[in-house]
Image (cartoon, rainbow, N blue to C red; front, side, top):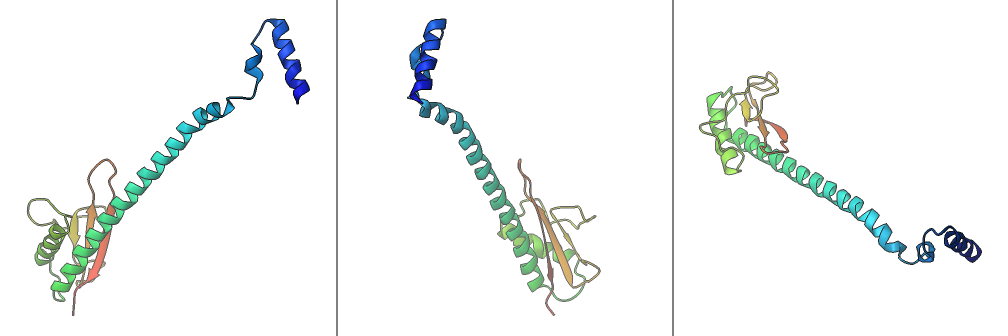
Length: 149
């Protein structure tokens, strides 16, 4: 190894090229840190962003679940329509899941969000709450529940 290092120094000195210190192995750690630091910071940013997205999704799902379960618990077994929306809105507001004016609207299609559907899947005793979050990373959650007998 020393023979190759010495030979490369001699060649560099003869050609008038790089000084001999360039070929030494001292100081290589700073170069590797400079190359790897942006990669490590990028990986950390992706992990933090993914964690934030997961927490946001969990929060929206919990709010939808709580609104559906609490409303179903308070309702009797019948197609409830407007009373369902009133109850779901009440519990959604308690969970900071609805800040709109009035009651949550009825779902017009399966892709609608921030709405209540009753009957759900053809069963008048079931209701579904569809919820989405606002912001740059919007997430959606759906929760279905059966009214008490």
